[in-house]
Length: 97
Image 1 (cartoon, rainbow, N blue to C red):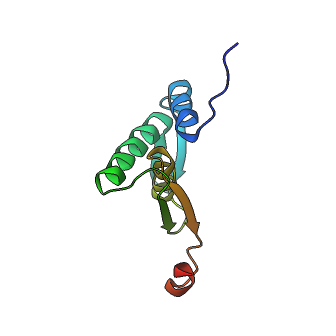
Image 2: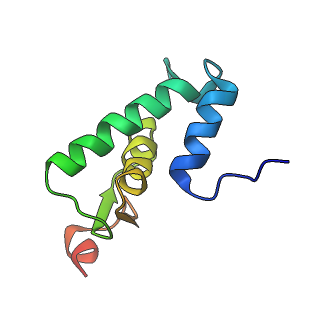
């Protein structure tokens, strides 16, 4: 019996392998498959690392709910960072606190 994935990146990779082209997210006229989500998260995570993100760095994602939010948030974990979600209704001052 195999063990379950224990990290978000491992869960995402397992879901991409298992569900492939099935929809993971649907937003208006945009649909992103599990495999596509995995690809976008990996590419975004690589971008974060190229910009200097290091393991355990905190990253604030301050945006309304969307596919892009999900990709950005998952990519933080994929790159080894720590996600700090901020309510999109907060003001800049509130997020800075």
